[in-house]
Image (cartoon, rainbow, N blue to C red):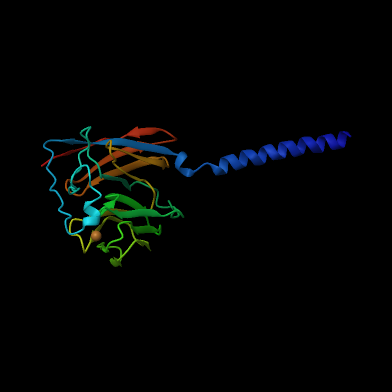
Length: 245
Ligand SMILES: [Cu+2]
């Protein structure tokens, strides 16, 4: 009986240990490490974005019932911040740092004859799924210089997949059929990037301790950098300000 009892205790302790290990290994790496977060502010005069005439594509035009579509070169949010700014760790990672590409894809959708998202990031080797939700002819062209350019005709509702082999900030994407369609893709060897959204904020998570050069890139206003030192699981703030011109 005593012998059986101690076997039971060992079994319980063993399964607790298994649970503990499972919980530890299950924790996504994005939750470990430090965070750099911030807002991209906008000052000065907000430029008026030209309206896009989509008369030649009634299917797309019909998707804009509230307001006519405008170009997205500069998108100033209602709270005065700037959207579509790609913020990423430009340098500071240890030379030995290696990150496998996530198995899940990044998706770029062509909907309403515009790209969604307009500015975004991907890791080297990660799948980019290019969706045509419009069901009309789009022809997406990637015009990178470090990555092999591509040119894909998508005559109907469909998805194509491509990958990128080298870091490049940014790869311009455009449509040969619709001259107003532009998107920008940042290809990185790590996942330490974010894009300012509808509230102007971005977040870069899971950073190992270190001192980093963080660059904020905007298609019209260029780049700005900040130096940020993080350790442990702390969160540091890095705000950027772009001035309208
Ligand atoms: Cu198109």
